[in-house]
Length: 306
Ligand SMILES: C[S@@+](CC[C@H](N)C(=O)[O-])C[C@H]1O[C@@H](n2cnc3c(N)ncnc32)[C@H](O)[C@@H]1O
Image (cartoon, rainbow, N blue to C red; front, side, top):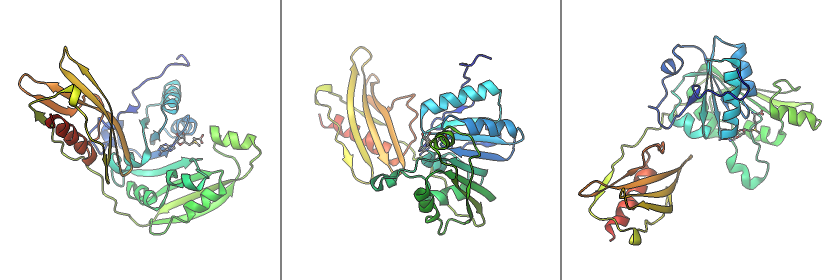
């Protein structure tokens, strides 16, 4: 197999799939299931999947570059027990990962966001630990390894009411990931390890899709089309509009931010012969939410304003 070969077979388009994911269908079997959050290059995920062919593995990573590297490793090793999801682990855990389906969750060297005004980006506050708990089976484990003591203490401070029993210690280098190598090369010889065992269940239900109402309007005038942004509990920001006069299709680009989910997509306004149909453009992989509906409603209002 050539070094650059990447199969997309392990890659799950979670926004396009029925949620929550059905692991028996995804893997074609039922096996202990491990999840890595922020796998970076996929070094550890691929190595662990190779060592444990009797387990199944899911990796979630925010950056496409990391996903590509992991896909190459998975293909190179011929692994069939790994699946990869691209995106923010928080909405994926909340919407796509079935309750009590995981045996182990781990995060190696998560970004510590040391500056105070960046703390809001940190993973594993109390709410996220409760979310992880709810997706773990009884006695399931969450494992965290970090180079950053202050971040480690911050996570330890978030454990109240998370249903976990904690075991914390310092350890020598042991996982050989890119970031462990980086800190090792910088002279760090001890890292901070936290093992959380689930002893009580936290009930965090799945976040479900909202049924979408698409709209039909009598008129659409590109010159006067100015959808109005929304800044309430949901943020809807319109970016640009394109129009194809031959096909009589307009597309308006929008960003919708709500809770922990940010979505960038296009809304299509298409002439159907007697009226214009407004809907999320096919292929954008939109998760149907209250915010998406507000965006569709704002487009309808902008058409009706003619
Ligand atoms: C410091 S790197 C560590 C990578 C790898 N675990 C290692 O040890 O080399 C942190 C990784 O977490 C990913 N990440 C950050 N926030 C994330 C989120 N909310 N969901 C999923 N991945 C995230 C980043 O893209 C990055 O690849």
